[in-house]
Amino acid sequence: MKNSIQNQLTSGLLRALSMLPYGLVARLGEALGSLLYRVPGKRKHILQTNLRLCFPEKTEAERELLARSTFRHVIRSYLERGTQWYGSTQAISDLVEMDSAIELKDSYDQPTIFLGFHFAAIEAGCIYYSTLHPVASIYTPMSDQATDDISREQRGRFGTEMIPRDGSAREILKVLKSGKPIMLAADMDFGLRDSVFVPFFGVQACTLTTVSRLARLARARVVPFVTGVAPNYLGYTLSIFKPMENFPCRDPAADALRINQFLEEQIRLIPEQYYWVHRRFKRRPAGEAPVY
Image (cartoon, rainbow, N blue to C red):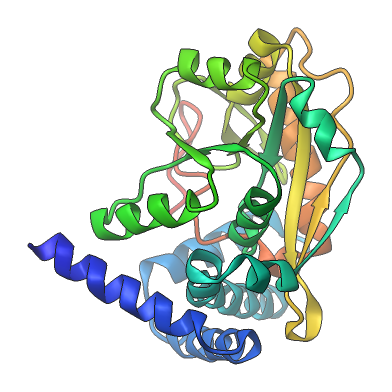
């Protein structure tokens, strides 16, 4: 009963937001983010800690400005899910400009893994792609059951096959070999299983080796993509890059490091849009103290 009520409230709020002009929702999200940043909280502490670890060359004042901007983008992204989860195909298409370095139809002639990253606009990019071509997506279940139910349903409303992260590798390989590409993100600390510690902004980070393992087993190419927030409240930019060369190699740690290095390059272009509110350094190598 409780989940049902939460579902209705969450769904109702997001539906209402989807009916408002995108620019207005974006501005409301930024204003709310500025307000919430003034309140001490766990996410604010995680954000500030991550920025201190990853940008030691910046002054404290510079990191504080970056933290405030990041928080505005994060909260804004939550409100914008109204359009992303409930907006029409046309509404979503009007907001996303795509630049692809590959011919997308080729992704159905050879196994393809689309490698995404947790920037504020990742949801928009994934959903936009699903309006164009069939795709499967590996997702991490949310802690709140009501929100998780809605997210699975709305992310899959254009036909995306949703596969939980703890699903079997056999199921994922079957999808890849069937000719349907898979979208996944591997830039969070998901635990020590199938992970290695490699540098991320010079800090040892628990990094998944899943991407290289799946690519090797399915003989799939790995195609990175990044969705950014366009300036002046014009929507989003979806950039699809060329497949990673000589990937995977024989060393999973080297593959994981390459992914982190690619991500670092993209973050430096739009650092305020990355989800620094995640505990990227939750687990530490043996002997190292916790950072949060």
